[in-house]
Image (cartoon, rainbow, N blue to C red; front, side, top):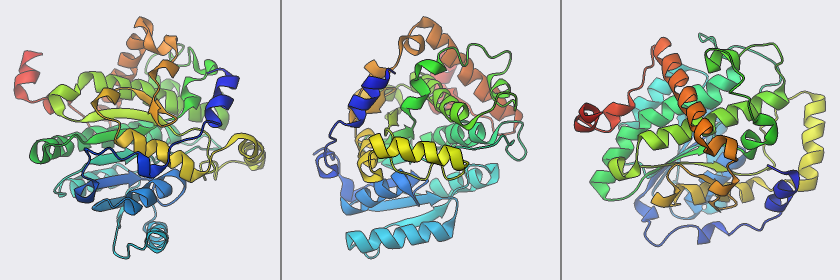
Length: 346
């Protein structure tokens, strides 16, 4: 996106959290899960949900001790002394994702799953047990696995409670920058193998690549699972540049660069978290769309993603993701989520 558009968006005043809950949403009976909720955007999103009166708020975190500290802070600031709970989720581990999904399936209902957890790695490493670079693995492979595996429980919730659950993936405008154009198209062979190569790896290019892959994957998944058939809204949201700990793994120069950039343009984590709330209550019209500045902003998606060639690329990303998960013994079957009749029809 053009830099001056980015500056304009960053300076836009966002609506308060209290104004984002639609009158049709019964938040007091709702169950909401926020991943990466012990710090930054996830923490402030969870805090808002508790403050707004959500019936059940689950902080999904890699470190339970840090999650418990975050929850204690939320309870103190909201005066809801028994609200919230902490669940362990380490997206760098298939075993942890499997255990989390098994626990998720014991819930009575899920109104919203906000997939916020992400990492930005300063150095190239491969995820343990997978021939995929760590940030690609966490931000895309296991995040999308969690998203798809959660769909049946959200479908069940929609039917049982006559409401519209939301699956929100927290992406970034970094993924749609002009420098990302052609990033996937240039890949030879399997996309995930190509973007996982150590050659040419830099923290400043890899993180946006993970977000571009997220955008392609979410758009394809939403097209495969129409909300009219599933009752579940799937969208993605850009919180903008915020004061968070996303660059905690960065080197000295990287941290200095981000500190200066944030000083000039960043939102607070609380402000950025409002965009997550908007996405989780955005309505059926947001299915498959890009949300930013607390509203649907699909016009921000560049033509090279939205046009016919972009659709081909998103299908390629999705197909390579499915193959990769199958190779890692964590296959997903989207047709099965639509029910046997729909699967047979296809």
